Length: 138
Image (cartoon, rainbow, N blue to C red; front, top):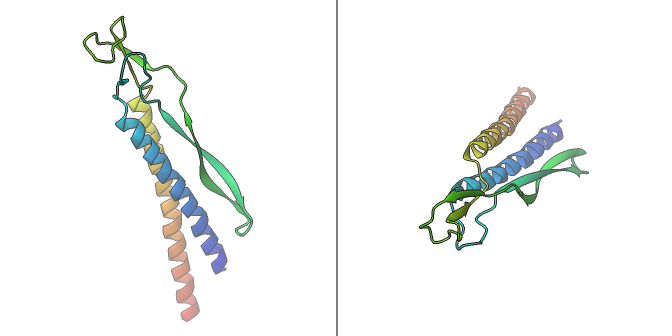
């Protein structure tokens, strides 16, 4: 029975790790959301998008979640008219990242909630394991 508890903890831990990595990528996107291109014609920061993989673990006989490759959002960059900016093109436009802070905020909220759900699995599993040990001692 304790191996079931341990398996639950291991699976939840992979979810915690994946959501933590997702939050780091979202934070990087938000930190770079207003970074202009360095020079005229250069691309600014491109939004990163985390992917996930379900990987079967033979030992656990269950799927674990893993962070997959980091993809790049291919949507258009933002263009702003700022003729005095060092990165302005000949028409006076500067390219800014394709990061929408509202989307990033919602993604962060979702990642946080998923992280908390996995943390609750860990907490409840530990409580059940403790209760089982108390019964066995009793």
